[in-house]
Image 1 (tube, rainbow, N blue to C red):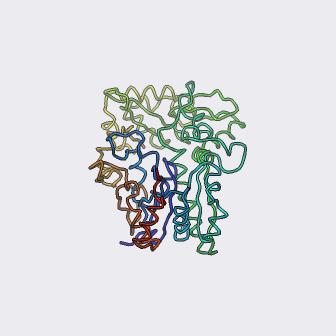
Image 2 (image 1 turned 90 degrees about the vertical axis):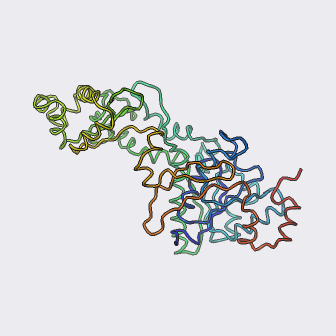
Image 3 (image 1 turned 45 degrees about the horizontal axis):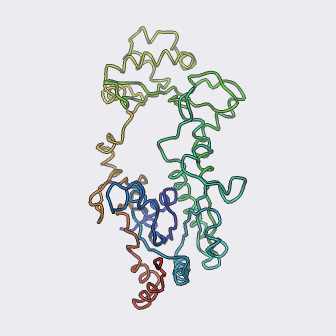
Length: 414
């Protein structure tokens, strides 16, 4: 079956999480992703190992649907191979620190000279320009500096990082979009271009509704927030919905750490919900007559709903509320999700087989294409496809490959 990105070849020099997330998504959609690694390999191959001697789950979860070649970029024959790959590929992806590729002789100007149709895509912590450009960035640093941590957590508690990797994986998703846009633009112009995503920028984009509230504060209190004391910045909102309707987590039986149901109390469902929870007395309670007064008295409303929830498990309560057309969803742990029929049915948790690890589970592709669905394949071993790529993509013969190996093009000679 033809894939959406058939014919697009990506030279992927990225490592750790942000870049590999991006290239993996493109691989899911059919691009030929060539993961170019130093002879030492991507650092995550050995990080947080759970099976001795095997690639870690940190690596395998981010590098499906790719081929691996090792190249020594400090070796002249290795640089020759890299130059040939630049000539033969459509996209070059990298997330090195500022100036690394320039020092190797392969900055954007040189890459564009070698292949004018090449799209070069970079992930940086803070971009290549500005006061922060030289700073090092990690996931949580990007969340801290992009406005996520200051707006996440309970009102009177410390800033909190999100469980979702919005700094790394979130930036990778942005970069994939930028790459596709540049490839479409190339169809119009015949030329490639440089694409850059900064982690800080992407986190700011993902917390965009907090910028809405940042400007609203200057015109008065934010009525939907449980607290009503504001400074000149968007506060942490706990589990408040952050939208026009009231929402929060309510605790269900048996009272465990994940026995919660998140519900959104829309205006048009309140009467049915109130009737089910407290009958006519609650329906007619003037504290909850409409959204305006419910916002002012939402603490009392949540106390009533929490008391009602304590009689049911989160799944039981979800069934009750779904019948009333109340938007809701249980707080699901990783164990819940791993064993969920809906998740399995959508192929979001798939079993793969690895030559070192044996059977293991990986997340699937969240982008569903009707005519070219993704087929998930395992991550490559280090340098597993070196000879194939040298022969099939670059046209080297066996003798020349052997000569380059002897010259140290693919290893660090001792």
